[in-house]
Image (cartoon, rainbow, N blue to C red; front, side):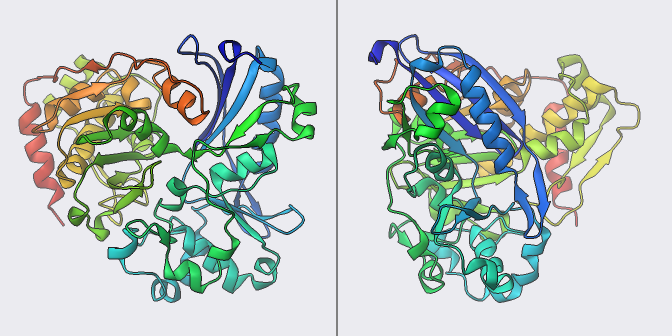
Length: 456
């Protein structure tokens, strides 16, 4: 297949949605996409990722994709804190969902075994948000099941294996609050070694490595060329981060990656600023280096506050400010204020756009707090759904004391898709600088919101 004619299929499995996008690197743009909502399923092993339905949808989407015969590389991207456990015959043993409350049953015993935070920079999180807790629960509470496990496949590499038949492990998913990795040492944690989990991990590969051609069964089901290859894949927030890192590895900058989670990653950030109790961690970038990170479940919290799909407007935001309507954390199970009950005040008569404006304002204020907690310097890049919100970036620019806020144009993931596929990357798109939104009462509102955060 001619390189100039080749397409890249980016398969992105988030916690909430799965998306398949065709990228034409020669044109430097996305040419087609489709998505589905993800579910979890209840089974004898507890809550599990619906990998069967996702795979059926993926194969059908590839089959109907325009120009499918031109797809040269499939690039899997997936969320963190997830792994699929496979036996020696290639049968799935379990695909745990990290929000299964059963994982809390082993909390006390598990906490005593974890490596020190100063070594893993992986905070102790609820439910199964530490992948190690998922493995420990299955190993100790479902011993009959766990004895069948031969391979632990982190979520992006589960999909690369399903497409190619080749197993691998990759560092960005290993370093996502798993408790399994020591980023400074670039080695498995003592926990992972003592429990025998490190031996279940496949050989480590780079996110940009091609693992091999698609399986014959995949080519037959989809109509893909038998020469189509599968890349190793990468953790989703690190894919967002990589598009900026490619040109600025030695610079200080901050990326706000949004979706189900809002994740703030500070390149060249000081890991000594990280505080375990505030859900701060070190992610690991595609080159293996630790990245100071703070986050909260921004997508979930936005939905809880907005409760509609209406877009926020400046007029709606002005009304929120004049009424003093306020949202205070937390509306999800993770983040710097996890454990607090979210509060909504003065919202009784707000309409849809006004609720959306309140949710956007809350998101900007929370994100500003995270940026400041990292001591972030340099430019601030907003990526994902929040970059498409008409008010978020402007509000963030008004709420942070330093740093120019910029957004990527639609389709800005084309370069990173080409990079992960091992193809020549198109020239970077023009970043768009954001002017701060100055509204009467905004700074006073922010000061009051910050004060209210300190209330017990």
